[in-house]
Length: 88
Image 1 (cartoon, one colour):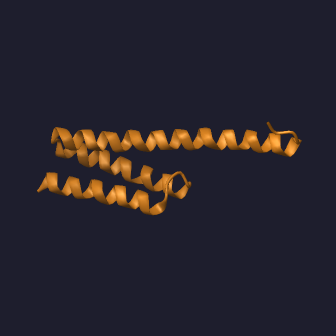
Image 2: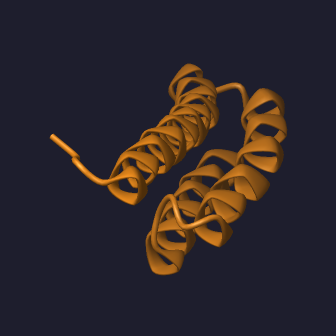
């Protein structure tokens, strides 16, 4: 347990940031899941709309440090590839 006042404040800050990051990570997963569900159903228009919403969320998560930049880019790339296969 933290003893000094600065250590107590640090634990409060860490808890606050963890909650924010958890919220952002959950939000990203929701958007990605919507794209994957649309791809699974074969609905091209819904998949494109979901992808257009998910891409900025993924990149925002990378900017905010929730996930690595390369991870976000890889996820966007793979979703775009699957969307392209569906539209072809």
